[in-house]
Image 1 (cartoon, rainbow, N blue to C red):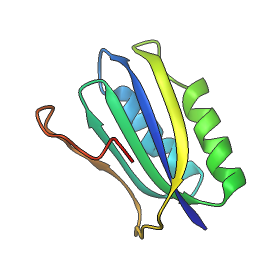
Image 2: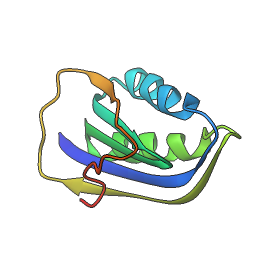
Image 3: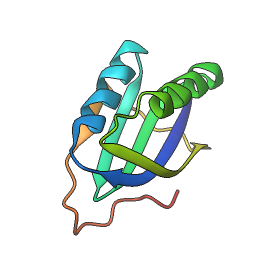
Image 4: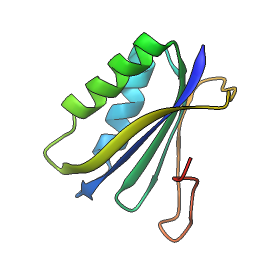
Length: 100
């Protein structure tokens, strides 16, 4: 099991994409979190490489019309432990770790 970060930048009219990603992660039986700030999403999850790739592709395919993806990438990062998959609320003025 590895930890992956998925960065998605785009234009978002509402927050429904965040909830959809959380439900998708639950369907994949993943642990991790989704964090949003403005029009940026950061998804962190624990998965094997194949599942992580499938999850990433499904996120991109299921983006609602209210979210226009401008850029995206996925990378393996140092292992993190999670008990479940959660949505983290972020103040748009805050600066979450979207760099790693």
